[in-house]
Image (cartoon, rainbow, N blue to C red; front, side, top):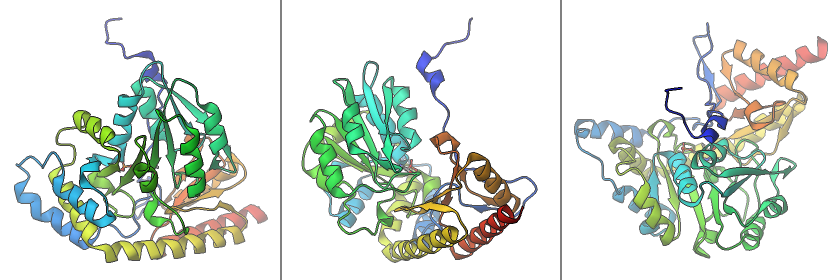
Length: 365
Ligand SMILES: *Cc1c(COP(=O)(O)O)cnc(C)c1O
């Protein structure tokens, strides 16, 4: 063997399976596989992106200062305690490498976001998956999995792909039950879509101590997934180390400009949220009415449960035949489910119509 050899644990990582965007032989594709914003980016964000085109020979501001100030203003946070990243994925990866590594454990829940497993294993940590209860993070199961080797606990709240939400009291119980030296990373990628009273995306727990971080993204409601912008709000001790290791110019010029403009066009975001709340409920109750179980969701997607992997696969194939791409869930150990992003009104109607026909066929065939 003369080829360079990776560390053995690297070969245990299954590459992230992104939502697909093509179906052979179909021209018009309805892509509901990646939880991208239903209406696309705010016009002001598009305009800002175009405006910087003539300046892309310049390096971006490596500290994303203007963007952090805009975030601070929008969310009432100290910009010094914000770090921006090339998507929140970059920040997840850095946290794993900073606090994890060989001989350490990282805990996530059974059906948690798969980037925690990929990045944790990459860092050399053992990634433990705590059982869930009713497809919801189980605080007791996570606490039971803690050992002296535990360094990070990742909780997406709301969780992708299950859509479930832990109440603030449960998040507080989790934090209180963890050893203080264990980092709690609260991933609030879908925070904007939550309508539950009393929900806090993580700010309160970050502010309450030195050991909690909140991760956010521009990829969902801000509809800038293609530009890769995420951020975290964290204690100073954590922002200090993140700033030492992150890509020096991690958030590119166009991404910073578009993200700032997107924050300024709050009306666009409010419309997207109102649409999501309405159509998440409508699509869920329609699917239930034709006999598909839908798990309650607090994000911009729903988890449709077909009962068996065979039926979920058949539904997936049926949708593809109509040019509709949703997300198969085998990689999340939920092969009997499909995750469906809440699209615009027409897209929701098309997916409802298709699944209505599919279920009618199941009954008569
Ligand atoms: C989409 C998503 C992210 C965002 O990733 P980006 O790298 O910012 O695009 C993070 N966490 C969860 C749970 C997600 O679903």
